[in-house]
Image (cartoon, rainbow, N blue to C red):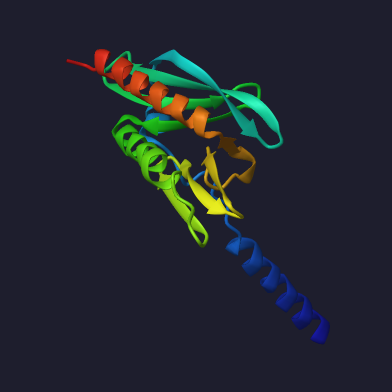
Length: 187
């Protein structure tokens, strides 16, 4: 009888632990992700590359494309637009919604004009987060600024680093993405 109670208790413990595990796939999804993956719909996708910059991915230099993505449901005519960062040859990408681009641009400008010109006396960080789970920013640690972007917040393997020069190049590409999206906006 003691064995049965012990085994039952062990079984219940394992069940409680197993049910308590987090089984979420990706809690960060952009509206564009949802729009592109709607069941029973035909979505036209137009990817317009505005530029490529070199970033540090892990220990190696890697090219990252900056794209404007135009989406259209061919049945309803509904449209979405976003910006896409794609680390080439790594299968890592992220989407920034069109209404978040100004926020990212503002953060990059603040980094360039206010933060990277300083030498803080303690750890300092500036971070911009998107609904899709992208983090971008900079931090000052060990006497230097590090500029980074994590394409997926929960994926440490998706972190890239940029030089101040590549960050300035990114600022220019983002301005071009905004121009492309404005030209292609539904009137």
